[in-house]
Image 1 (tube, helix red, strand yellow):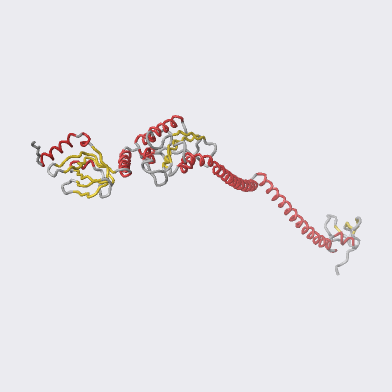
Image 2 (tube, one colour; image 1 turned 60 degrees about the vertical axis):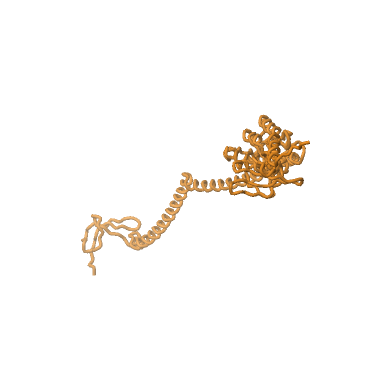
Length: 401
């Protein structure tokens, strides 16, 4: 019996055709760890993909380099998408890569950065679109899981700060399948309900757990929401796309509740302190006003007509008293002078002389006779005495000697 004998080339060609006819081999994704990674000067990348069960050689031609968005290196966990083909010359099959992406968290991080850059370029992170969080709210909307620490923290903080604020919870899926649509529906429902502020968040977790808050649909729902939105996803070290789009980012759900709900007791204490300060300021102003009134009153009294009349009246009284004293003094002086003159006059008074026995002799013309030689015998004379008058005629005239 004659055996079929094939050449090496025929066998390699046959095997190559087998791979080429296998649809799965033409579009396959393989994950593993990168080793023996070499960037050739021609632009081709040669590397080996391995896992605990085996290895496979791989190559990415320079023309497909646009399918690699990161610098691949030894030890990277990657997912390679391409075709498995046989290199006919060597009779070896290898993986021809068209796309390479990081596996797990690494790949998600690249998607995160790409979406972040895209949305930022669209202006969705711009501060001018951020809405102000109102200081005093009455209704707080919450989009989170109905169970877990996040909602409980928000409830506790809100009740402590202001028990009068109404909390409205939209129970949403925060991870896994259906989480994105659940979060979006919650935001839109609470926005339509007309709450004052919406908190969108959950507790911390891995990037895979938080990934729903990195989806574009959630980012657009937050951006288009008319109600101010506070994002509270994860812990302080976790940042999501929702944090960048939200009007305010809180590091934790507890912090979000503190930012959304004003402290009632602190507000009361602040009002009391301001009231006391206002009363002190008012009392101080009243004291100053009273002092000014007193000053104005004193000044008014000084310049008022009544005061000036009183002043002039007192001045007139003073002048009257001064005039009286001066008149008294003048009268006293005049009386004294009169007494002196009176004394002097008494010394030369005819009456005084008459009272001493002297008399006043006048001729018939009434002229005083002081010289006997001026009269002659027979002249009539009038003799004036202290009491009465005598008529006489000269009977004899004597010489002065």
